[in-house]
Amino acid sequence: MVAYDFTKVPVIKVVDDIIVQAAKSGASDIHFDPRESDLLVRIRVDGDLRDYTRIPKVYERNLITRIKLLSNMNITENRLPQDGAIKGVIGGLALDMRVSTLPTNEGEKCVIRILDYTRSLSGLEALGFNKANFEKLQRMISVPNGIILITGATGSGKSTTVYSILQKLNRPETNIITVEDPIEMNLEGLNQVQVNSEIGLDFATVLRSILRQDPNIILIGEIRDSETAKIAVRASITGHLVLSTIHTNNSLSTIERLLDMNVERYLLSTALTGIISQRLAKMLCPHCRQKVKTDAYQKKVFKLAMNQDVDEIYAAKEGGCEQCNNGYRGRIAIQEVLVINDTIRDALNNEKLEREDIRRMVYNSDVITMLQDALGKVLEGTTSFDEVYRIIDIDDDLDEMFEEEIDRKNLHDETTDAIVKTSKKKEKQKKTTDVEPPQITIPSLDSFVVSSPRPYPGTVPEK
Image (cartoon, rainbow, N blue to C red; front, side):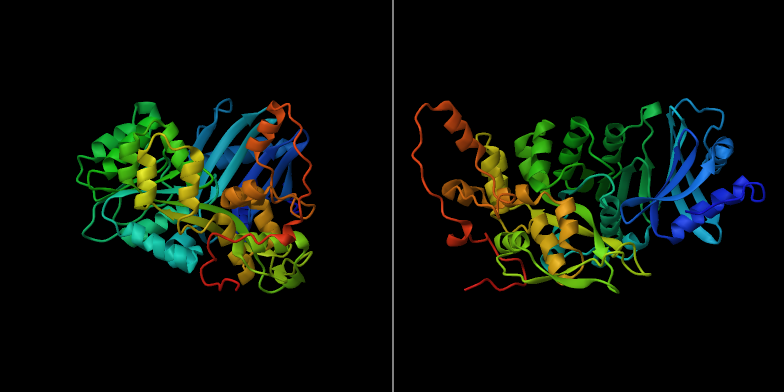
């Protein structure tokens, strides 16, 4: 915790120092949280918040006012949320930040998002795609029309991926127009439009006008409603390449979300080119990571998902070293890339197909699931199994991959209880019948051979 002497250091310098030190630490956000007795300042590094300093309550109002002045906010308004931006040189660092304030019962909470463009400007090669997924991505963006969706939760690196793709596509012979809220990065050669809902300039309104601007490539910052989704899909089938983001967890849920938004099936099957789903995992510190033996649960996960017997993996060193934060340093994207093929297009056109049928077609294609990509990065020593367990629901992912085999064999033992779930359909049938089912002794999982639908690219299946 850093301590500031406000009797000797003015508030202006304190704000500058907090921002500069957070930027040097690689923080993505700075939180100013009002408490009953003081103002707690926290910084988010590698996805985790940690305490930085405490500001006496008497100086809280002055400090928040200083931040508002820097971000061109109304300093007399403290009853409503406000948004602003800070761009300039602070403490010798060229910084671009987004600022948001929110009234709480203890005062105004303020969050500063520090925008880091280094990954976006480094190109697609710096985003951590494995070889197979990178080749799929290159094929997707080479198609002259269609819609490519980048999905994930807030803060999962979607904007970084989108801007990296735009950098790749930004050529003198193309007309690229973006509709964003807000514009997070200014790129030379792009026509970027800022949405302003207060005057009626929303995504749908701008998109209608964009189609008359002779665009080659359109970026829609986010698909938030059915109207935007329908216009985006229609734009993609009229000869435009459309990029957009949507808040879903994986490829299958993205397709379901678009259908729930009442996008016509025949349009979606024609327009959709591919889906990139991603999450961020903390990277192991290369200076202090250490090898550990895999336990029974980890062995089963690697065997089921990767079709590999793994005895050793890298893990974070407890306490870390001087170069990292508790064994981790930086973050990397875990991705799932789905290229829509003819089989999936036919499935989308068929209204009688259930979710399970679409799931089977999605995950029986050449898609590398997010779990497989994450475990591949564990084997490379890039991240740890603990991080994979934290950001991915391993049980559900394995259910998606092996639902048919698990239902047929009804596998269950102590080791795989967290991995394999009994089919809900069979449980429901058991409750509605009055007949006592015969007692059958189920052998352990070790007596079965559960094959992976496909080996992870670059690995050799077991004989």
